[in-house]
Image 1 (tube, rainbow over the protein chains, first blue to last red):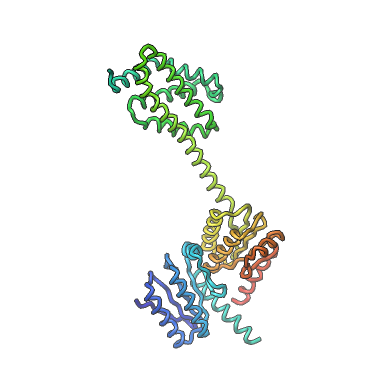
Image 2: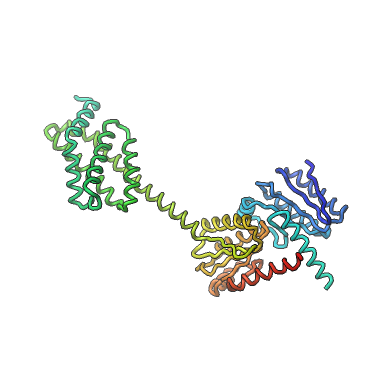
Length: 126
Length: 278
Protein backbone atom coordinates (compact mmCIF):
# COMPACT_ATOMS: atom_id res chain seq x y z
CA UNK A 1 0.00 0.00 0.00
CA UNK A 2 1.30 3.42 -0.91
CA UNK A 3 1.10 6.08 1.78
CA UNK A 4 1.41 9.59 0.40
CA UNK A 5 4.21 11.70 1.86
CA UNK A 6 3.27 15.38 1.59
CA UNK A 7 5.63 18.32 1.66
CA UNK A 8 4.78 21.72 3.10
CA UNK A 9 7.56 24.28 3.24
CA UNK A 10 10.38 22.55 5.07
CA UNK A 11 8.24 19.81 6.53
CA UNK A 12 7.13 16.40 5.41
CA UNK A 13 3.74 15.15 6.53
CA UNK A 14 2.58 11.54 6.65
CA UNK A 15 -1.02 10.90 7.61
CA UNK A 16 -2.16 7.35 8.33
CA UNK A 17 -5.70 6.75 7.19
CA UNK A 18 -6.13 3.06 7.95
CA UNK A 19 -4.43 0.17 9.67
CA UNK A 20 -1.11 -0.81 8.16
CA UNK A 21 0.50 -4.21 7.98
CA UNK A 22 3.99 -4.68 9.36
CA UNK A 23 5.27 -4.91 5.82
CA UNK A 24 3.64 -1.61 4.86
CA UNK A 25 5.30 0.03 7.82
CA UNK A 26 8.75 -1.18 6.87
CA UNK A 27 8.20 0.03 3.33
CA UNK A 28 7.03 3.37 4.66
CA UNK A 29 10.16 3.72 6.77
CA UNK A 30 12.36 3.34 3.73
CA UNK A 31 10.27 5.71 1.65
CA UNK A 32 10.30 8.39 4.32
CA UNK A 33 14.06 8.27 4.73
CA UNK A 34 14.50 8.49 0.96
CA UNK A 35 12.16 11.48 0.88
CA UNK A 36 14.01 13.21 3.68
CA UNK A 37 17.27 12.83 1.83
CA UNK A 38 15.75 14.03 -1.44
CA UNK A 39 13.92 17.05 -0.07
CA UNK A 40 16.30 17.94 2.72
CA UNK A 41 13.29 18.49 4.99
CA UNK A 42 13.90 19.97 8.42
CA UNK A 43 10.93 18.36 10.09
CA UNK A 44 8.70 15.32 9.78
CA UNK A 45 5.13 15.11 11.05
CA UNK A 46 3.51 11.71 11.50
CA UNK A 47 -0.23 12.02 12.00
CA UNK A 48 -1.99 9.01 13.48
CA UNK A 49 -5.29 10.69 14.38
CA UNK A 50 -7.24 8.13 12.38
CA UNK A 51 -5.71 5.10 14.09
CA UNK A 52 -7.76 3.50 16.84
CA UNK A 53 -5.27 0.71 17.38
CA UNK A 54 -1.50 1.00 17.61
CA UNK A 55 0.39 -2.21 18.33
CA UNK A 56 3.86 -2.48 19.76
CA UNK A 57 5.45 -3.08 16.38
CA UNK A 58 3.95 0.11 15.03
CA UNK A 59 5.04 2.05 18.10
CA UNK A 60 8.57 0.73 17.75
CA UNK A 61 8.67 1.52 14.04
CA UNK A 62 7.49 5.08 14.61
CA UNK A 63 10.11 5.53 17.29
CA UNK A 64 12.80 4.12 15.01
CA UNK A 65 11.72 6.40 12.15
CA UNK A 66 12.17 9.30 14.53
CA UNK A 67 15.66 8.11 15.55
CA UNK A 68 16.73 7.51 11.94
CA UNK A 69 15.38 10.86 10.80
CA UNK A 70 17.34 12.47 13.63
CA UNK A 71 20.52 10.92 12.19
CA UNK A 72 19.68 12.66 8.93
CA UNK A 73 19.21 15.94 10.77
CA UNK A 74 15.40 15.96 10.71
CA UNK A 75 13.20 16.39 13.74
CA UNK A 76 10.10 14.20 14.04
CA UNK A 77 6.85 14.96 15.84
CA UNK A 78 4.07 12.41 16.28
CA UNK A 79 0.62 13.94 16.42
CA UNK A 80 -2.93 12.79 17.05
CA UNK A 81 -2.40 9.88 19.41
CA UNK A 82 -5.90 9.07 20.69
CA UNK A 83 -6.44 8.87 24.47
CA UNK A 84 -7.45 5.22 24.21
CA UNK A 85 -4.32 4.47 22.20
CA UNK A 86 -2.12 6.26 24.73
CA UNK A 87 -3.73 4.27 27.55
CA UNK A 88 -3.20 0.98 25.77
CA UNK A 89 0.41 1.73 24.94
CA UNK A 90 1.15 2.72 28.53
CA UNK A 91 -0.60 -0.40 29.83
CA UNK A 92 1.45 -2.50 27.41
CA UNK A 93 4.46 -1.18 29.30
CA UNK A 94 5.67 0.82 26.34
CA UNK A 95 7.73 3.83 27.27
CA UNK A 96 8.27 6.61 24.78
CA UNK A 97 11.59 8.40 24.83
CA UNK A 98 11.51 11.73 26.53
CA UNK A 99 13.18 13.44 23.62
CA UNK A 100 10.49 12.23 21.20
CA UNK A 101 8.25 15.12 20.24
CA UNK A 102 4.50 14.66 20.47
CA UNK A 103 1.54 16.97 19.99
CA UNK A 104 -2.22 16.80 20.25
CA UNK A 105 -2.95 17.69 16.64
CA UNK A 106 -1.33 18.61 13.34
CA UNK A 107 -1.39 22.34 13.98
CA UNK A 108 0.24 22.04 17.38
CA UNK A 109 2.73 19.58 15.97
CA UNK A 110 3.88 21.95 13.25
CA UNK A 111 4.16 24.78 15.78
CA UNK A 112 6.18 22.56 18.06
CA UNK A 113 8.54 21.62 15.21
CA UNK A 114 9.05 25.26 14.26
CA UNK A 115 9.74 26.18 17.86
CA UNK A 116 12.16 23.37 18.39
CA UNK A 117 14.06 24.09 15.16
CA UNK A 118 14.17 27.80 16.06
CA UNK A 119 15.57 27.15 19.50
CA UNK A 120 18.26 24.93 18.03
CA UNK A 121 19.23 27.70 15.66
CA UNK A 122 19.48 30.11 18.57
CA UNK A 123 21.79 27.77 20.41
CA UNK A 124 23.88 27.39 17.27
CA UNK A 125 24.13 31.19 16.90
CA UNK A 126 25.13 31.62 20.51
CA UNK B 1 -51.30 -43.25 50.72
CA UNK B 2 -51.95 -39.75 49.49
CA UNK B 3 -49.92 -38.34 46.54
CA UNK B 4 -47.74 -35.32 47.04
CA UNK B 5 -49.87 -33.22 44.72
CA UNK B 6 -52.95 -33.93 46.71
CA UNK B 7 -51.13 -33.06 49.91
CA UNK B 8 -49.84 -29.85 48.39
CA UNK B 9 -53.39 -28.91 47.48
CA UNK B 10 -54.51 -29.68 50.97
CA UNK B 11 -51.69 -27.60 52.44
CA UNK B 12 -52.41 -24.55 50.29
CA UNK B 13 -56.07 -24.94 51.07
CA UNK B 14 -55.29 -24.95 54.77
CA UNK B 15 -53.05 -21.90 54.46
CA UNK B 16 -55.67 -20.04 52.47
CA UNK B 17 -58.44 -20.85 54.91
CA UNK B 18 -56.40 -19.56 57.82
CA UNK B 19 -54.91 -16.54 56.11
CA UNK B 20 -55.94 -14.03 58.77
CA UNK B 21 -54.77 -16.14 61.63
CA UNK B 22 -51.35 -16.64 60.05
CA UNK B 23 -50.92 -12.99 59.19
CA UNK B 24 -51.93 -11.85 62.65
CA UNK B 25 -49.73 -14.38 64.37
CA UNK B 26 -46.72 -13.17 62.38
CA UNK B 27 -47.47 -9.52 63.09
CA UNK B 28 -47.93 -10.32 66.76
CA UNK B 29 -44.62 -12.13 67.06
CA UNK B 30 -42.78 -9.55 65.00
CA UNK B 31 -44.17 -6.79 67.22
CA UNK B 32 -43.06 -8.66 70.32
CA UNK B 33 -39.55 -8.79 68.90
CA UNK B 34 -39.77 -5.04 68.15
CA UNK B 35 -38.99 -5.64 64.50
CA UNK B 36 -41.89 -3.62 63.16
CA UNK B 37 -41.34 -0.43 65.11
CA UNK B 38 -40.46 1.67 62.11
CA UNK B 39 -43.61 0.75 60.22
CA UNK B 40 -47.10 2.26 60.39
CA UNK B 41 -50.12 -0.06 60.94
CA UNK B 42 -51.03 0.23 57.26
CA UNK B 43 -47.51 -0.74 56.24
CA UNK B 44 -47.55 -3.67 58.64
CA UNK B 45 -50.79 -4.86 57.09
CA UNK B 46 -49.25 -4.54 53.61
CA UNK B 47 -46.10 -6.33 54.68
CA UNK B 48 -47.85 -9.26 56.27
CA UNK B 49 -50.16 -9.65 53.27
CA UNK B 50 -47.28 -9.44 50.84
CA UNK B 51 -45.29 -12.06 52.70
CA UNK B 52 -48.30 -14.32 53.10
CA UNK B 53 -49.23 -14.05 49.42
CA UNK B 54 -45.69 -14.75 48.37
CA UNK B 55 -45.42 -17.85 50.52
CA UNK B 56 -48.74 -19.31 49.45
CA UNK B 57 -48.08 -18.56 45.80
CA UNK B 58 -44.69 -20.19 45.99
CA UNK B 59 -46.00 -23.30 47.69
CA UNK B 60 -48.89 -23.47 45.25
CA UNK B 61 -46.98 -22.93 42.00
CA UNK B 62 -43.82 -24.73 42.97
CA UNK B 63 -41.68 -22.01 41.38
CA UNK B 64 -39.89 -19.13 43.02
CA UNK B 65 -40.67 -16.24 40.69
CA UNK B 66 -43.03 -14.65 43.18
CA UNK B 67 -40.49 -15.05 45.95
CA UNK B 68 -37.75 -13.50 43.83
CA UNK B 69 -39.94 -10.58 42.88
CA UNK B 70 -40.94 -10.03 46.48
CA UNK B 71 -37.32 -10.33 47.61
CA UNK B 72 -36.18 -7.69 45.13
CA UNK B 73 -38.83 -5.23 46.21
CA UNK B 74 -38.22 -5.98 49.83
CA UNK B 75 -34.48 -5.53 49.40
CA UNK B 76 -34.86 -2.13 47.77
CA UNK B 77 -37.27 -1.01 50.45
CA UNK B 78 -35.24 -2.49 53.24
CA UNK B 79 -32.07 -0.77 52.20
CA UNK B 80 -33.82 2.52 51.69
CA UNK B 81 -35.35 2.42 55.12
CA UNK B 82 -32.07 1.31 56.61
CA UNK B 83 -33.26 -2.04 57.89
CA UNK B 84 -30.47 -4.31 58.97
CA UNK B 85 -29.80 -7.75 57.52
CA UNK B 86 -30.50 -9.04 61.01
CA UNK B 87 -34.03 -7.61 61.04
CA UNK B 88 -34.89 -8.98 57.61
CA UNK B 89 -33.60 -12.46 58.38
CA UNK B 90 -35.29 -12.50 61.79
CA UNK B 91 -38.54 -11.55 60.11
CA UNK B 92 -38.25 -14.36 57.61
CA UNK B 93 -37.28 -16.88 60.29
CA UNK B 94 -40.29 -15.85 62.34
CA UNK B 95 -42.47 -16.38 59.32
CA UNK B 96 -41.05 -19.85 58.87
CA UNK B 97 -41.72 -20.55 62.55
CA UNK B 98 -45.29 -19.34 62.46
CA UNK B 99 -46.19 -21.45 59.43
CA UNK B 100 -44.29 -24.43 60.78
CA UNK B 101 -46.11 -24.35 64.07
CA UNK B 102 -49.39 -23.91 62.27
CA UNK B 103 -48.71 -27.02 60.23
CA UNK B 104 -47.74 -28.95 63.35
CA UNK B 105 -50.94 -28.01 65.13
CA UNK B 106 -53.06 -29.01 62.16
CA UNK B 107 -51.48 -32.38 61.60
CA UNK B 108 -50.47 -33.42 65.10
CA UNK B 109 -52.96 -36.30 65.00
CA UNK B 110 -51.51 -37.82 61.84
CA UNK B 111 -47.77 -38.13 62.24
CA UNK B 112 -47.00 -39.75 58.86
CA UNK B 113 -48.92 -37.06 57.08
CA UNK B 114 -47.18 -34.42 59.15
CA UNK B 115 -43.79 -35.67 58.01
CA UNK B 116 -44.87 -35.61 54.40
CA UNK B 117 -46.25 -32.10 54.66
CA UNK B 118 -43.09 -30.95 56.37
CA UNK B 119 -41.09 -32.56 53.57
CA UNK B 120 -42.92 -30.31 51.16
CA UNK B 121 -42.97 -27.24 53.31
CA UNK B 122 -39.43 -27.15 54.73
CA UNK B 123 -37.43 -26.95 51.44
CA UNK B 124 -39.74 -24.26 50.11
CA UNK B 125 -39.54 -22.21 53.29
CA UNK B 126 -35.76 -22.53 53.38
CA UNK B 127 -35.47 -21.56 49.77
CA UNK B 128 -37.62 -18.45 50.27
CA UNK B 129 -35.52 -17.43 53.24
CA UNK B 130 -32.40 -17.95 51.17
CA UNK B 131 -33.75 -15.89 48.28
CA UNK B 132 -34.76 -12.99 50.46
CA UNK B 133 -31.47 -12.91 52.38
CA UNK B 134 -29.46 -13.11 49.17
CA UNK B 135 -31.47 -10.40 47.49
CA UNK B 136 -30.93 -8.18 50.47
CA UNK B 137 -27.17 -8.67 50.47
CA UNK B 138 -26.99 -8.18 46.70
CA UNK B 139 -28.97 -4.99 46.89
CA UNK B 140 -26.63 -3.69 49.56
CA UNK B 141 -23.58 -4.59 47.49
CA UNK B 142 -25.06 -2.84 44.50
CA UNK B 143 -25.56 0.34 46.52
CA UNK B 144 -22.01 0.14 47.86
CA UNK B 145 -20.60 -0.27 44.36
CA UNK B 146 -22.61 2.66 43.10
CA UNK B 147 -21.36 4.83 45.90
CA UNK B 148 -17.79 3.77 45.31
CA UNK B 149 -18.08 4.75 41.66
CA UNK B 150 -19.57 8.09 42.59
CA UNK B 151 -16.77 8.70 45.07
CA UNK B 152 -14.19 7.81 42.46
CA UNK B 153 -15.60 10.41 40.11
CA UNK B 154 -15.74 13.03 42.78
CA UNK B 155 -12.25 12.37 44.00
CA UNK B 156 -10.30 13.46 40.94
CA UNK B 157 -11.18 16.86 39.58
CA UNK B 158 -9.22 18.07 36.58
CA UNK B 159 -9.13 21.86 36.65
CA UNK B 160 -8.24 24.20 33.86
CA UNK B 161 -6.56 27.24 35.37
CA UNK B 162 -5.15 28.88 32.25
CA UNK B 163 -5.69 28.46 28.54
CA UNK B 164 -3.24 25.62 28.27
CA UNK B 165 -2.68 24.52 31.84
CA UNK B 166 -4.54 21.78 33.68
CA UNK B 167 -4.19 21.15 37.41
CA UNK B 168 -4.94 17.75 38.93
CA UNK B 169 -4.96 17.88 42.73
CA UNK B 170 -4.72 14.33 44.04
CA UNK B 171 -6.03 13.64 47.51
CA UNK B 172 -6.06 10.33 49.35
CA UNK B 173 -4.54 6.98 48.59
CA UNK B 174 -4.13 5.95 44.98
CA UNK B 175 -4.82 2.34 44.04
CA UNK B 176 -4.78 0.95 40.54
CA UNK B 177 -8.51 1.41 39.96
CA UNK B 178 -8.27 5.05 40.90
CA UNK B 179 -5.06 5.54 38.95
CA UNK B 180 -6.70 4.14 35.82
CA UNK B 181 -9.64 6.46 36.28
CA UNK B 182 -7.37 9.47 36.80
CA UNK B 183 -5.40 8.79 33.61
CA UNK B 184 -8.55 8.37 31.59
CA UNK B 185 -10.12 11.55 32.89
CA UNK B 186 -6.91 13.49 32.44
CA UNK B 187 -6.41 12.36 28.84
CA UNK B 188 -9.95 13.28 27.91
CA UNK B 189 -9.50 16.68 29.53
CA UNK B 190 -6.27 17.24 27.59
CA UNK B 191 -8.12 16.57 24.35
CA UNK B 192 -11.09 18.72 25.35
CA UNK B 193 -9.08 21.72 26.53
CA UNK B 194 -6.10 21.38 24.18
CA UNK B 195 -3.86 21.75 27.20
CA UNK B 196 -0.13 21.52 26.75
CA UNK B 197 0.93 21.47 30.40
CA UNK B 198 -0.45 19.33 33.21
CA UNK B 199 0.38 19.99 36.84
CA UNK B 200 -0.24 17.03 39.14
CA UNK B 201 -0.26 18.10 42.77
CA UNK B 202 0.26 15.25 45.21
CA UNK B 203 0.34 17.22 48.45
CA UNK B 204 -2.74 15.30 49.57
CA UNK B 205 -1.37 11.84 48.86
CA UNK B 206 -0.24 10.44 52.20
CA UNK B 207 2.02 7.63 51.03
CA UNK B 208 3.92 7.33 47.80
CA UNK B 209 5.45 3.93 47.19
CA UNK B 210 6.73 2.21 44.08
CA UNK B 211 3.21 1.39 42.91
CA UNK B 212 2.04 4.99 43.14
CA UNK B 213 5.26 6.21 41.51
CA UNK B 214 4.63 3.74 38.71
CA UNK B 215 1.08 5.06 38.27
CA UNK B 216 2.48 8.59 38.09
CA UNK B 217 5.03 7.59 35.47
CA UNK B 218 2.30 5.94 33.40
CA UNK B 219 0.14 9.05 33.68
CA UNK B 220 3.01 11.27 32.59
CA UNK B 221 3.82 8.95 29.68
CA UNK B 222 0.25 8.90 28.46
CA UNK B 223 -0.06 12.68 28.71
CA UNK B 224 3.21 13.05 26.85
CA UNK B 225 1.80 10.94 24.02
CA UNK B 226 -0.96 13.52 23.69
CA UNK B 227 1.66 16.24 23.60
CA UNK B 228 1.25 17.55 27.14
CA UNK B 229 4.19 18.02 29.50
CA UNK B 230 3.65 17.17 33.14
CA UNK B 231 4.92 18.88 36.27
CA UNK B 232 4.64 17.06 39.60
CA UNK B 233 4.31 19.27 42.66
CA UNK B 234 3.91 18.81 46.37
CA UNK B 235 6.12 15.81 47.10
CA UNK B 236 6.55 15.95 50.87
CA UNK B 237 10.01 15.56 52.45
CA UNK B 238 9.00 12.20 53.90
CA UNK B 239 7.82 10.98 50.51
CA UNK B 240 10.98 12.26 48.83
CA UNK B 241 13.00 10.18 51.29
CA UNK B 242 10.90 7.10 50.66
CA UNK B 243 11.14 7.42 46.91
CA UNK B 244 14.90 7.82 46.94
CA UNK B 245 15.40 4.96 49.40
CA UNK B 246 13.17 2.76 47.26
CA UNK B 247 15.37 3.57 44.31
CA UNK B 248 12.51 4.93 42.20
CA UNK B 249 13.96 6.83 39.28
CA UNK B 250 12.05 10.05 38.77
CA UNK B 251 14.81 11.84 36.91
CA UNK B 252 12.68 12.28 33.82
CA UNK B 253 9.92 13.94 35.80
CA UNK B 254 9.76 17.67 36.18
CA UNK B 255 9.11 18.24 39.87
CA UNK B 256 8.56 21.35 41.94
CA UNK B 257 8.12 21.75 45.65
CA UNK B 258 4.78 23.50 45.72
CA UNK B 259 1.82 23.96 43.44
CA UNK B 260 2.71 27.65 43.36
CA UNK B 261 6.20 27.11 41.99
CA UNK B 262 4.81 24.50 39.60
CA UNK B 263 2.39 27.06 38.19
CA UNK B 264 5.20 29.57 37.91
CA UNK B 265 7.23 27.08 35.90
CA UNK B 266 4.26 26.31 33.67
CA UNK B 267 3.77 30.02 33.02
CA UNK B 268 7.43 30.36 32.13
CA UNK B 269 7.23 27.42 29.77
CA UNK B 270 4.19 28.94 28.06
CA UNK B 271 5.64 32.42 27.92
CA UNK B 272 8.64 31.06 26.06
CA UNK B 273 6.23 29.59 23.59
CA UNK B 274 4.33 32.82 23.19
CA UNK B 275 7.49 34.90 22.68
CA UNK B 276 8.80 32.49 20.14
CA UNK B 277 5.62 32.35 18.11
CA UNK B 278 5.65 36.12 17.56
